[in-house]
Image (cartoon, rainbow over all chains, first blue to last red; front, side):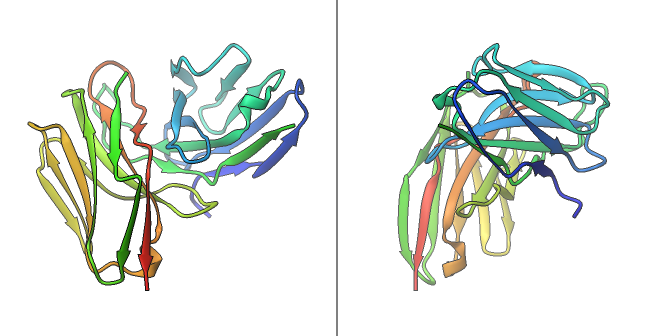
Length: 119
Length: 114
């Protein structure tokens, strides 16, 4: 499968616990995005990487959230001290960006998501 | 930030009829407008997109139109089939700053009745 993959697909945790999700983008894609989707809503942007650099973070991303992409390939999203309001689908997407500020492709391809339930 | 309004929130059509979903936006700097289809429990899938230098794009039964002056874009599905039933999201990408993220509409639940 050459698409975006995410692990785990489902996570149930108790309030206060830490969780970590992984995203593997399409191999040649240098841009990686994290979004959060709650029931009945469209995805909301959380953060974005170009290669290993985290270039943008949403105001939605509280200090309990941290994301990394250490080698410019896979990424992890960690939520510390989870709260019930963190329950959502966490989606990862990737795209092939150009260099020198010129985008060769805007198309973002999504992974299957990790559904987080905080009890 | 950018805001996208999507209408209607639900849409039921008879098989074979056409479906139209419309989105309006406020930031004239937006330059890329994709549409995603999301079936229950599955990932959003890109079905068609359009850039701001184009007014219309068609791919078989699906078309997207963009009116930059009025700041709205629409998805048109012709000859609908039951497998078209899903939630459809419009989205857009701003051209300014370093942001590359998409801003999504709230979705339209399309039901195609056999």
